[in-house]
Amino acid sequence: MEQSSRISSVARAAIGLLAVALLALAVGGCGGSSSGSSEEASLTGSGYPGVDAANTRNAKSTIDSSNVSSLSVAWKAKIPGTSSFGSYASTPVIDKGVIYSQDLASNVQALSLDSGEVLWNATFEQPSEGPNGVVVAEGKVFGTTPTEAFALDQKTGNQLWSVKLTRNEVEGIDMAPGYQDGLVYASTVPVTTEAAYAGGGVGTLWALDAKTGKKKWHFDTVPKSLWGDPEFNSGGGVWYPPAFDGKGSMYFGVGNPAPFPGTPVKPWGSGRPGPNLYTDSLVKMNAKTGKLDWYHQVTPHDLYDWDFQGPPILMKVGGKEIVAAAGKSGIVLAADPKTGKVLWQVAVGKHNGHDDDGLLAMRGEESKIGAPTTVYPGNLGGVIAPMSTDGSLLFVPVVNNPAKIASGSETEEPGPTSGEIVALDAATGKVAWKEELASPAFGATTAVNDLVFATSYEGTLSAYDAKTGQVVWREKLPAGTNSGVMLEGDTLIAPAGVAAAAGETPQIVAFRAGE
Image 1: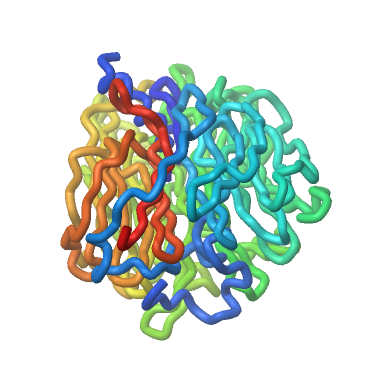
Image 2: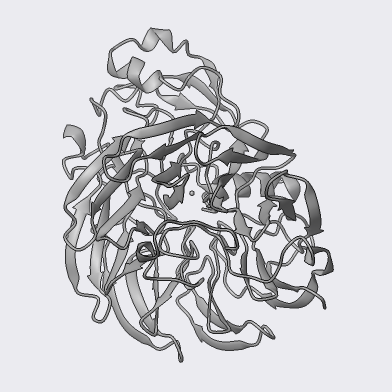
């Protein structure tokens, strides 16, 4: 999933899935932001993984093009936990001079922004595939383990409540929760560290009382009947915190259906007939009641694990409100928040003519797919990590990875993988600039003033001129990364959570301007 972490044997291609495969090879085995009206983001500051409730990832910082070259390491902190998917995949959040951070063992730490000193630990030691993470609100730190949502006391780390959300052993949780107006939002997914898309896994979004954890309502992103075959089918779920417009509505993206592309007995998804709603969709609903307002499905009857999972961004461009979203189909779009009407839609990264294969299969025209074949983007490609915006451009991290489709029931191991950072005009979707990368962009981008920061898997952190794409600062991190960065004041926090080569140690690195 920006920064998810799933091994190559897991068909769902979240960020760390390919990261672990690449790891095996490596070791031989908002200044200027306009996010809409002020009422859009009642939760402000970087205590939200998307920086604000509109998910702009436009950080508040004094770092800009005039001082970025003075960034130097202020401190490093070891990441305490690990899982078979790596050590870290989330975005740290910052509130009142304290960093709140969750690793891939679900452990939560509070660190001093100034010194990196550990202020408290909340130990769970429950391995997660990520992207996970926490959100800070109401004096609490909200997060999830692979089975539960929880709240911690912000000052002490003491647990205040926890509630189990999974129904069975094939459902998990891998997201940072959302928060708005006294409710916490967390979703199950049909993936765990032990099983991926086993039959019966349903992605269900829950709204919980922030004070007590009491369940208020839920929304099944796919039906529990799983299109008539719950023994084999699964799907749906939410990876990232929703966006909230401050007017009572929330927006989120939904994961893919499975099995994909199908089974030997029921190839090309024929065991799950129809479009498989609400998979691969952008959804708007009432945040208080869970009542569906509208949805837009990007990939009906998905065959290639093309989650439309990215956290939507609410913004105002050219005087017009839009909701921008992206996913593993390699599609970025802008829609009218009131109606869901698509205003523009563009393909980013490599595509080779297979974008409508799901529609072909749904119509019984599988022969036109032409298997065996190679598909771009593959199930490890597209836009896996969150985008950011400076109010006029969208900054998109892209993964270019092919899927080798042997038949209507078989997907072979992924091929060579590269990446791109693409800047799109938020008003039109036109490409403003892009940089091609030698390794995949599994980490979220982060906008700040006249810059945008991005990472690549092998551990390169880059600052680009937001308007031109010129690299103005670049640094090698002490390990690989599938995370984005967070900034506040004169400090930049960069997680390096993937030991991609011998001798590398997963760490959180703080860079400070003028040091």
